[in-house]
Length: 288
Image (cartoon, rainbow, N blue to C red; front, side):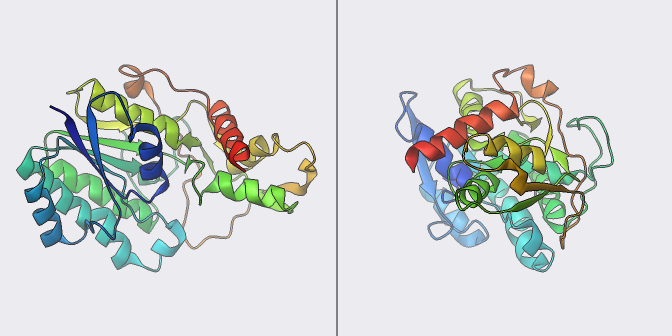
């Protein structure tokens, strides 16, 4: 029998990446990709009815409210998707014996640390997005025993709109850019995260719980932009200016690098962030 996998938030960059890599596969996986218009996870009744009609082995929850800036003004909306809906999803998974794989964020931390965050470190989000994601994590932990929560950081892919696709577009236009150095984290490819999720399912891992997954190393947003610019020989890198200021409605953690030590005990194929960025930028340029 095939392993049936529901992927929510299929129109987001992670959902699209999972579909790119594994929609046609030889692992006897049967994927069901649903967008918000096809399955609104914040609608408890609809969600229950959908799960009652199907029998899923896994649910990969890629659905999320990810606009960090807008979340400061749309608090009800961000908690509706990132917290309440996650609780509804966890309830459905419990009823149907479905293993939930939920994507969370480095923004559950306050950035006061100066060494990589462990899964066991105290959470203290400093913006509404981070608070809503932490609330979602807690609902899962209250409802389920068998789950994977994967905290990741600074996700990007070939699918717009994210930091890489935006910077590539701006550089093609010859634009002047001012990029902050005030935040340090780890750019992480949706491709690599998708591979890790695939491994969790294929290996039938029973080591449930919280995991941190990001690329190796750390960078500022300025470092990130400069790495992308390496792919454009005709672009004057002096057009990219560093700044310590960053105008934002939402407070951002100054340091949100996460330790991969727990993840690497099981899965150790992560690349350095710069290598992963190069791979995705090359893919974007090859397709244009």
